[in-house]
Length: 323
Image 1 (tube, rainbow, N blue to C red):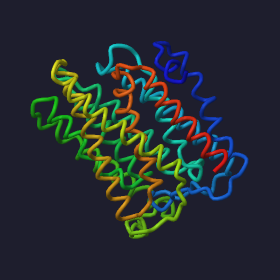
Image 2 (cartoon, one colour):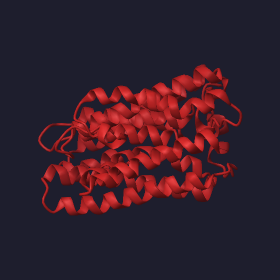
Image 3 (cartoon, one colour):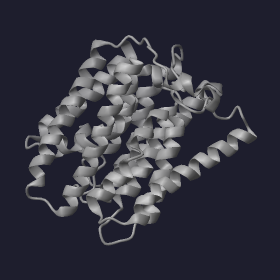
Image 4 (spheres, rainbow, N blue to C red):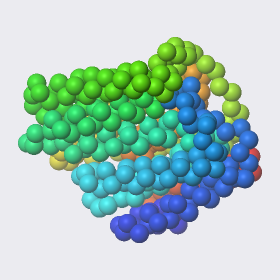
């Protein structure tokens, strides 16, 4: 039922996303104990100062906006033959995975800016000058890094896409450097005017190792395993599709693969440096929502796709409500 609904080529299906999000977040609205703001990993520290209910509503609105933007980015590309809204559903499911993170936190906001950057990069074509797109995407990645500092690993992404899609142009390749100096300039300027706004004087605490203890149920581990399996299946499907696809399709696939590889690097950093599986789940929302639809759409037996996505939803809902 869920797969059939979001596989319909009509934007009206997106109106069900807020309902699904509210259903999954309802337990955390009733019981707010144990919420984790993840402020350690951000250059900003105002998240926990917001009223809990307001922070939860704001977080849901940002997550829904990011989900819709992901589907819009996919639909404006040449990755599928028709519009797809499964990426939006998958993003909402992943971001609603852990009950302790049902609150505004740096990754929720950072993901929005990162998806905006990816949207800009998806618009790059070989024949059209793209200095403006590279500059904007680099600035957006830097802003995302202010909210969630480890996202600085995505800073080389504009150069990667330039090397994949466009012939070498010095001015285009300099745009990320220009954006870096511009954002750093504004951060330093704001820090001079308002020294407590950023945590620049305490940046060591951001990069220092830390172990965060959250008890993960067997259901969470099963759902995470299902998503990992689906993503690697999608990678295999993409390799097969590359054989008989357009040049544009191949290059966009390389962009998605680059995002996935950076995510793997971030996951290794988080697991062995911060020892926090829940953060891996949150930062996986973007690559999973980009990759997983390929498995669901290209599998021949559609009833398997229905069982797969419905099982993930039911397991997450059961875990949030009863475990």
